[in-house]
Length: 79
Image (cartoon, rainbow, N blue to C red; front, side):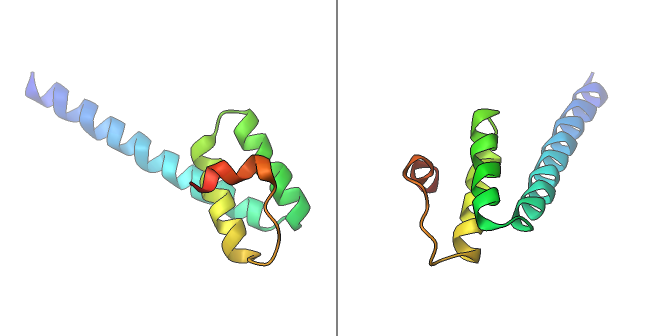
């Protein structure tokens, strides 16, 4: 009984870790893009329901390009 439960918890923890790694990796890929294409990539994330990834990518975008304007439709992600 309890051995089963532990492996399920470990499994879901492993999934959470790999999901975070995937998000980090893909954000690193976004960061290689020109600013206009990077914003398009963030919009694509929103459209494909990757709000977590979109938010993280936009945060990095803002750090990387502090002087560039963020489109109105993406600003709610920063809240």
